[in-house]
Length: 279
Image (tube, rainbow, N blue to C red):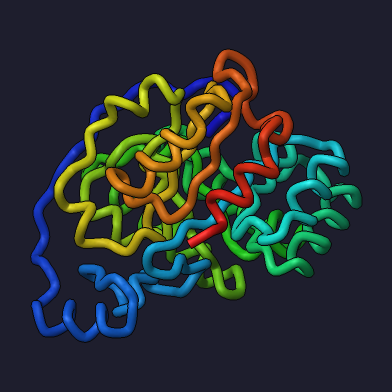
């Protein structure tokens, strides 16, 4: 999720064994979705924000500076589960007290704040990404990292597994989100707490193809971002995200993808928060 629109990528599919029926039945009795390779709450190696069965949470790509936009998100009830802190396409060159204050305010409201780092489709040196992770931790006290421009093919799996391990070893409670922008090789589902599997316009979302293996995972494993979504299409967008995509985390905005669709809050944010935050 860079400040410019990402290139389209085709979804990929890899097969892994399904959980046993006994495990599925036991988990469903407790109202959670079982996940291959994860705990029975579907939370991956470590527990990040978890969406209850049948529910969704909002999240906010906070790629803006204005305190008013941050406050609008933070003061929402229910508050967004996650906010993505993008200081300057990364942590910047030095800590900014402005964002330190806003991060603390968000965390005080119960919001998980994730620092932003682009991996440049696996081409960025791991040491450079690790340095950004370290800066986010020491400067802003984030709860985890959002790895953008993720290459979701199996050849890059070890690269992202190494980064995920670093995040979890160095950030207390280290939550890992990956932004592939499409469905990755299924093996990536064991790397992250949550994978952004769609980032695009509403018009593209209507025809998005969802692989069958998605049903094996908790909704908490999936995030969708829809920009260029008119208010007249908002209800349809939410319905598709629930019935077809099973996205546990959702952000919808009417801002256009031709510029920075994350430069401000959506004009219909109050409706969005009330709709998506309702089970």
